[in-house]
Image (cartoon, rainbow, N blue to C red; front, side, top):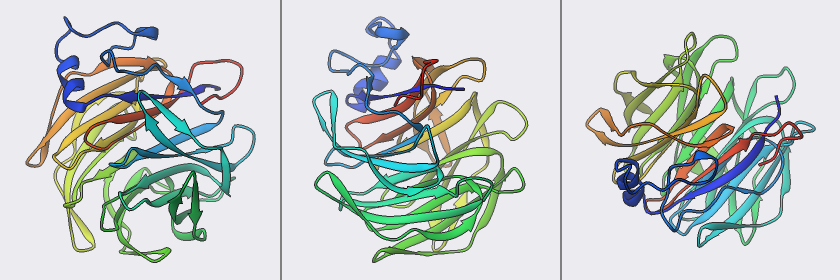
Length: 316
């Protein structure tokens, strides 16, 4: 299946939540998108490729990684939000592999994880730092085996990673800390079963995770908190149906979730808020057409990237 990837910028998350909950003020945008106000930017093509992932810090610096549509090479962009657009730097190769995930903090420290290309199931990470419109990467270091990794970082360098087993539909996590250009990882610990996990963390160690059921097209979440090199997870709770979920969180517990419909190539969004060990979700709404959505936020803005619908080639 081929597709195109676009990025969207959400305005103030409080405004977004109000818009989502009030159809009378919710404007109709192109392609049936419902999210936004007069400052909301239209989805814009920025590259071609597969499996995009995006990250954003409080300075509105954004980092995007993706896989080439032609071969198993990995590429990144550094960008800066200007108005309702992202001013992207060039597309630069940094490694080979598939299924990359990226995160950035306010010190412009970047962590990236990915899976080996081909039939291999090794998981690898890079630590880097944004310098202008480029990233000064450390080496590619193996840390586990598995598939579909996702990563998140705090301002003080605490890292949480989740992935699916390379053999079974079980879900595993690591807690680690950046030390120089390496990460000191804790053990690999199973926390659930499922596929396509995504994780986000606040600076005080509150963790939210979403994934799809290994059997059904149902979507589930966990709320947890980092305690040492482990996470104290709450229960696994269903919140919707769909595939390919992605989650982001602000430091005050506001959650943005995006996913693809289980029935077609439509994209949907939830806004929610963490309350104890649960999330109080708003209603799910369609915002675009496409596949493989990923979202990031910083408390004022949220950015989303996805593959758009096309039969020609994979555009981002």
